[in-house]
Length: 199
Ligand code: GAR
Image (cartoon, rainbow, N blue to C red; front, side):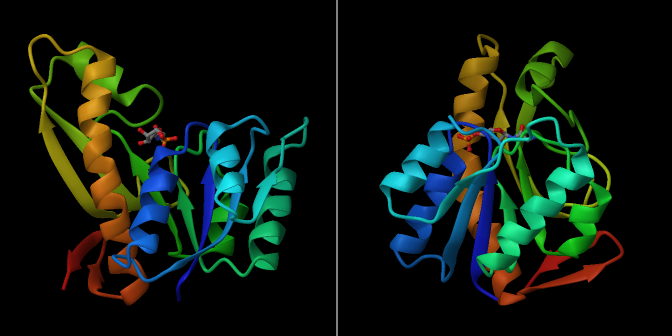
């Protein structure tokens, strides 16, 4: 398994970090397609410029499962074996999750299970935590809840804003996402219940 389908909605810096890990030989994989639900997503434009197959599939009032079926079809057509959510800001239907069992990864900017959902870095600051971070996890049917593959922690400084904290977390995101993809693609892990241990 080495063909990755990327889903993104915005800036695309995690996608770029993955593409660079592949280009530098640190990650043995291939980007099969980059898909966005937002036609104007900067990440999609970067993917286009770098010559990757890209697709914009706007939701256009389609209900969630109908939309996801279009997505599943597009990913299958491009031979995507592992789906990586890289700032994909849309809930997935159960049908989507079940179409790629154990083969969807997400990166989230918090130490899950703390602060799932939107604006995780803002939630962390508002809660007053002293340590924040990011999580790469398998996607299951619930939001930000699947088995955790890797996490990285960063300090929250007294003068942090959501923006400065996000920058510190993002550096770690870029590092651990490629590493988690490598672990999953090479099968270098064991799973017991929801506990993943890396070999
Ligand atoms: C990243 O911080 C990612 O963790 C977050 O969106 C940002 C996307 O940045 N994802 C979520 O919050 C998902 N719940 P990017 O487009 O530059 O990769």
